[in-house]
Image (cartoon, rainbow, N blue to C red; front, side, top):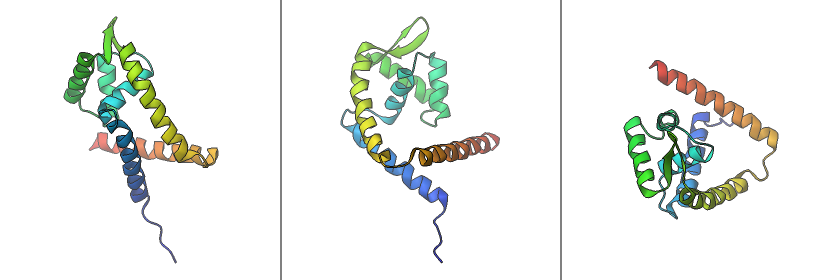
Length: 141
C-alpha cells in the first residue's frame, strides 16, 4: 500500500515552487516580493499607510517597521504617492506594475490551464481554511 506524503509537505513544495516562479518574474525588473505585494495591494485601490502596513503584516510579508521602510522607499522612487491621506500607485508606478502583473498572470494562467474550475475552487476553500486555522493558532501562541 502506498502512503501519501503529508499534506503539509505538498503545500510547502507548491508554495516554494510558486515563489520561485514569481521570484524569476520579479528579478527581471529588480522588484522584491514585498514591493510586488505592496503594489498589488494598492493596485486594488487606495489605502492609508496603516491599512497597507496591516495588510503586509497580515500576509506575513513585512513587519510594521519593514512596511514603513518599504512604503518610504516606494514613495521616494515615485512608485506610490500619498493623496488626501491615502496611498496609491502613481502613473509611473502603474506603468511599471501593469506589464509585470500581466507577465505573472500569463505564468499563472499556464499553471492552471487544464485544471477543472471545481478542483480549483475546492483547493482554494481548503487552503483558505488551513490558512485561517494557522493564523488563529499563531494568534493564540
